[in-house]
Amino acid sequence: MPTRSRSTRKVLVFTLLVALVTGLIFGLAPASQASHFNLSETLKEGGRDSGAGVRGKRLRSSLVIAEVAVSVVLLIGAGLLINSFMHLRNLDPGFRADHLLALNVNLSEVKYPDTARRTAFFDEVVRRVLPLPGA
Image (cartoon, rainbow, N blue to C red):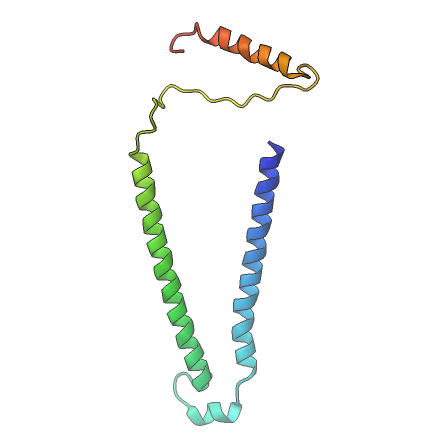
């Protein structure tokens, strides 16, 4: 059980780091572009997008193209994931999954130090559970 929470923590830390790095990269790119614009060229161009310039318009257009491409890829991936999930729901697992009980039993190292005692414990559990109705 501790390994599961440790691996979960690792995944969460990795996800947090990726989100922070992505935010910094995509936040610094527009900030660096905004800090290097030529005021005289901007005043000469005029118009609605006067703060951009030719390079800024080209960069903005390529960012829009990249955003649309990424969103199309994500939509296709989501559609395939939903399709696969629907196929998995209709798949016959080869056994009856209703009225099943799954347990994770952690035996004490003090009370059951060796495999012989653990095996005896589980044999006793099976012996007691088999006479129950539905077993």
